[in-house]
Amino acid sequence: MSATSERRVFDAADPDVNVYRLLTAVVVPRPIAWVSTVSGDGRGNLAPHSFFTVACARPPVVQFTSVGSKDTLRNARETGEFVVNLVSRPLLEAANGTSAPFDHGVDEAEALGVEMEPSEQVRPPRVRRSPASIECRLHSTIELGDSTLVLGDVVAITVRAEALEGDHPAIAALEPVSRLGRDEWGLPPQVLRVPRPRRPEDVTGR
Image 1 (cartoon, rainbow, N blue to C red):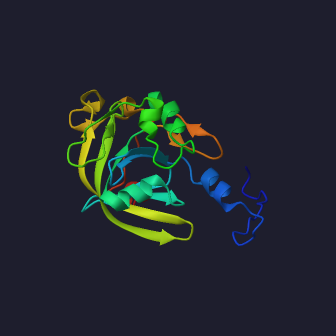
Image 2 (spheres, one colour):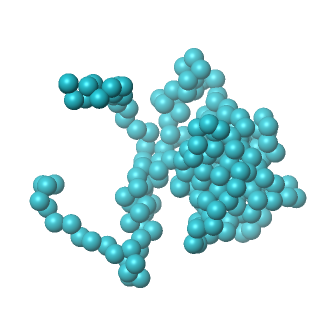
Image 3 (tube, rainbow, N blue to C red):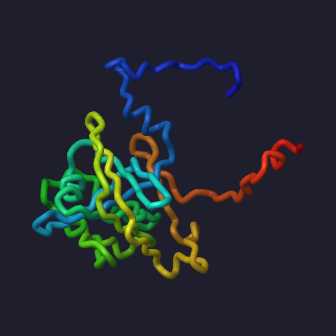
């Protein structure tokens, strides 16, 4: 694409513009929070959320967004806990399956045969085959139009032994997949190592 090529402008205020589809096609790739929760009466829930990232390093806080009011959000508010499970390549089909519109109260993991196991510090279980999980206690929620931002204090991070190099998670073993636009998913990425500049002169040569 040349520097002088024309651009089409999509006005976010235009009701005929599908801003959601544009954003999810441009903000890519997006990591997936495969969130496991339990309701106040103990019913399990497992659902993928692709608006997910780290919110704070110290103290450690992660965030995901619930588009609409879903069981994940209701359960997190009821119990104050949730677990983010990493979706690896072998788990893509299972994670995609849990996005189906199951009836309220249906345990997606049970319905689809996704094996769960007890977490370390919170009540919701983690996905047994997921190479890594982040156990959280609810920090807060923020209402944003038709969506709710969910912030969680990280209380434990678990990584399967075979996915570690020393004490560091290995990307080749994690095999993370990502969400793109429409029904597109990104496979585990090609990895490039690029040293981060520590001084201005490292990039300016002066």
